[in-house]
Length: 115
Image (cartoon, rainbow, N blue to C red; front, top):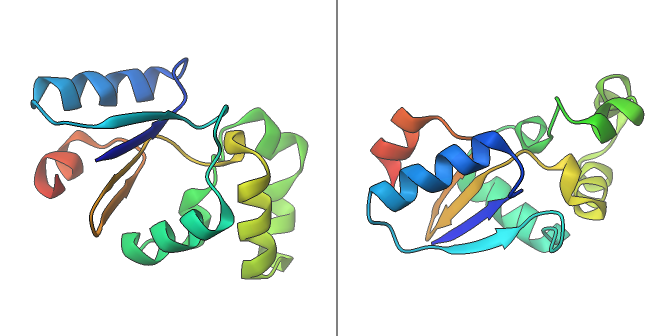
């Protein structure tokens, strides 16, 4: 399993402890140092079944600085994927990728059910 996170994020730390407590094997990837590519984001989006907006870190400083709340509705999907791939801090985290299962954000009940 791939665990994409920002090590300083408290939610990511909570998710990592949960995974460790469940005895899950996973590889950690720092989203800031090694941000997801456009291709990866497209694959994860498709597998997740989530709306693309759910992949944006809407509480992040960069999201706010770029006024994405107002800009996203007018952007094409291609533009949104390119933007997400441009900076890992725009991407909601943590992300767990396990085969065809992709979970975005940490909700313990969802992770317990799906991983």
